[in-house]
Image (cartoon, rainbow, N blue to C red; front, side):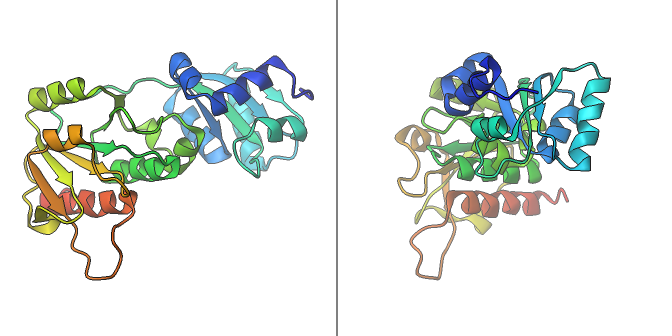
Length: 259
């Protein structure tokens, strides 16, 4: 059993939890909780480290046994160590470090999504989860959007990372992809453009949703072919960005009648 928070592996995990540059350089995700750990196992992702505490539930113990049967190194740690490396207030008692494989983009892309200047990890995670549910084929993250490998993003996305191709692109790369895939670019705006339910979303497209406080960046606006907005008869000035993304993405789903 690992009992010291000074253990080199514990220090490595703590650094990964806090350091976005190190997560990017090493290409890893830190996953907490049995549900996400099960999904990582089922997806066949390379598991670099598997830790658990003695009092985890039977479901977690069964997963640990399956990992051992696959020949992976599984280590028991003390509750003190698990609390020290956990990114949550209440640790779920199971933690994996996994290699993040860059899921392939399968052309032609008919529905792509770009969260612009989204800095809140919970918001981005919810957007990824919603995009996965709506059948988005590619999520593009431009400069200024929070790291999609952030532990809070991973938890909020609820498994979207395991099936959704995600790319961090420069604006030049984004423009090149839009041209190559012949995508119509729609920008969700606060008060101008076409009401979202009147827009024609049937052609291949990229939807951009910007930060709710500041809106979309100038680069995003320059890329857009058409702006759409969500009419709000109430007194709120704006919708949460993740909610706005969900409203428009599922209008796209409705128009295309893919469910």
